[in-house]
Length: 139
Image (spheres, rainbow, N blue to C red):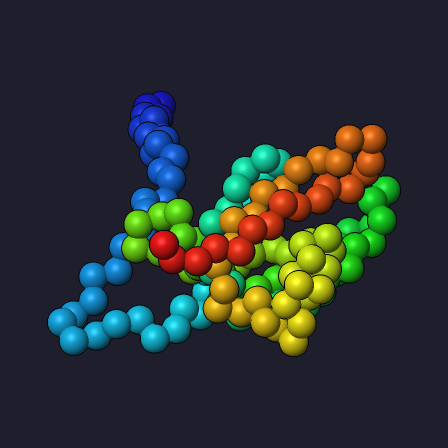
C-alpha cells in the first residue's frame, strides 16, 4: 500500500523586528505616543534622556509563587531617548535611588521637561545600585 510522502517542513528563519519608522503624510506630526518600548538599565551605560511625564506606579501583575520575594510594582515615566537620531519615546523604569534623586532635586515633578545624563553603577560592597545624574542644557 502506497503512503503519501510528507513534505519536509521548511523552518522559517527567526526575524527580529526592524527599526520602526513612521512616514507621516505631509502636514501631520505625532501629537502623543501611546505605547513605547521599555528602556532597560545596564550597569555603566549612560542614558541621555528628556523626561516627558511625571513618575507613576505601573499596574501590579500577579506573579508565580517562587523563591523570589514579591516585588512592588515598578515606578515608570515616559522619556525621550536623546541618543538616537529623531529622538525616540520610551518607557523608563525608575528605581528607588533614581526616584529619590530626582524628587529631592526637583520637587513637585520639576524634572519633567528637563534633560539628563543618567548612569547606573554598582556600589562596591553593597547590594543596591546607585546613579550618577547630570542635568543637561542645550549648548
